[in-house]
Amino acid sequence: MKQINKLLIAVIVFGLLNTPVMAKNSHSNIRMVPASFSELAKQAKPGVVNIQTVKNIEGGGRVYKHFFGQPFGGNRDMFDEFFAPFFNQRPENRKESSLGSGFIISKDGYIVTNNHVIKDADKIKVILHDKTEYDAIIIGTDPMTDLALIKIKAENLMPLTFGSSLEAEVGSWVVAIGSPFGLEQTVTAGIISAKGRILGSGPYDDFIQTDASINPGNSGGPLLNLDGEVIGINTAIIKSGQGIGFAIPSDLATGVIDQLTEQKTVSRGWMGVAIQNVTKQLAEYYGIKETKGVYVAKVYDGDPADNAGIKVGDVIFQINDKKIESSRDLTLTIAASSVGETVKVKLIRDGKEKMIKVKLGKRPEQDPDKAKIMDEYDSFGFSLKQMDSDMAKKLGYPEDIKGLVVTDIESGSQASKTSVRRGDLLMEVNRYKIDTIEDYTQYLKKIATGRTVHLLFRRGNSHVFVVSFEKS
Figure 1 (cartoon, helix red, strand yellow):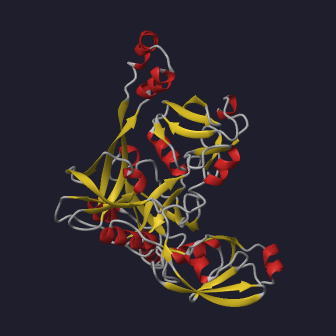
Figure 2: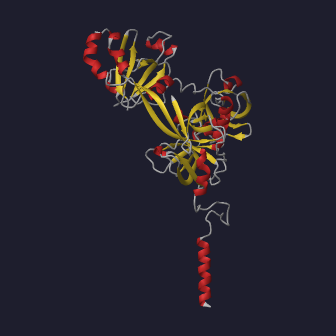
C-alpha cells in the first residue's frame, strides 16, 4: 500500500512539473510565466526588420576659411600658407551610419519605425529576417510622437498586427524584438513595469515602461503581448538605468499611422491655450472643491480659444463628456480631436461654472512660445530668444533684423569664457543663417561630435565677431 501511495505521489509531482505554466491561473485571468517564448518569436520575427541609414554630416574646414579668411580682410596667400595644411586634413563632409529597427504593417511593404531612426537620412536600407535588402522611402513622419512610416517595394510580406495598449496591464508579460547594437532579430522578454510615463520629450508623452531589455538599435521595434500583437513601439532608454525601457503605446500610435498612411502628415486639434495643473493654492483661490482641472495661464491671440471667449484664469474641468484632471488629459484629448470639430468646454470662471463651445483649429508644428525661446541652456551655455521688432527697438537693432538674442549665459559654461554677453545677436552658425530656435537646434544636430562650431554674433549696429566651440 505504501508503495502504491509513493507511486501516486510521484505521478502527481511529475504531472505538476510538466503542466504548462502558460495556462491561466484558476483564480484569475492573468497569464502565468510562459514556459517558452520560442513560438511567439518564430511567429513575430518575419515581421520585424533591421533599418540602416546613412546621412551626410557637414564638416568645418570650408566654414573656418569663411570666418577667418578673406571675408574679414586677411591676406589669402598668407592664410593658405599657414592654415591650409591643417584644413586639408579635415574633410568638409563625411557620412554617418546609424542602426535601428522597425516592423511591417502591410503585405505590400509599409513599415513603422521611430522618427529619430530615419530623421535627416539620405539613404534608408531595410533588411528583412531572411537577409533580403531593400531601399526604403519615407511616407510620413510625426516628430511629436517620434513615429515614422516608411515603405519598401515588396509583396507578400508577413505583417504584425496591433493590439490594445489600453487593455495591457502593469505586470503582464511582453516581448521586445529588434536589433540592439546592430545584432539583428534579438528577442528579449520582461513585464510592463508602468504605464503613462512622462519623460519630458514632448507634449504627447504617455510611455509604457518595461524591463524587457531595450538597447541602442532597438528603437522602432515592436513590443509584443503574449498573443504576438504590437502594444508598443520601443523608443527610449534611460542611459543611467539598466533594465528600464520605454515604448509608445499602440493606441496612440495607430491613429498617427493611419493619418500618415492616408495624408503623409498628421493634423491635431488645437485650442490655443497655455495650461498648468490646478494646485491646492489655486483651488482654494478659485473656490474649487478638488485640485482637478487645468488652469489657463495664457490664451494665444486669434486662436480658437481666444475666438470662443476663453480667458486667462479660467479653470477647465471637462471637454465634452471627458473629465479633465490634468494638463496631460487636456493635451491628449484635444490632440485626439479632429481639426474643425466643435467641442464643449466646461470651466469655472469667477467661482461659477460656464460652458463654452470651441471650434478647434490645426495644431502648429511647434507651440508658439517654444518657437521663440529656449526652455534651457544650449550645450554651450547660451539661453536664446527669437528676435522680434519690440526687442529689436529696445536693443538698438533694425526692426526687421533676424536672429537669436542671448538672454542669459550659464555660469561656468564654455559660453561664459567667451566675450559674448547678454543682448548680443546670434546670426549664423557655420555660415548657415539662423532665424528661429528650431533653425538653431536642428542645424546643431547635423554637426558631428568633435567638430568645430563657429557662431557669428552681432553687437549693436556695427560690431560683428565669431566665437568657436568644439561640439561635445
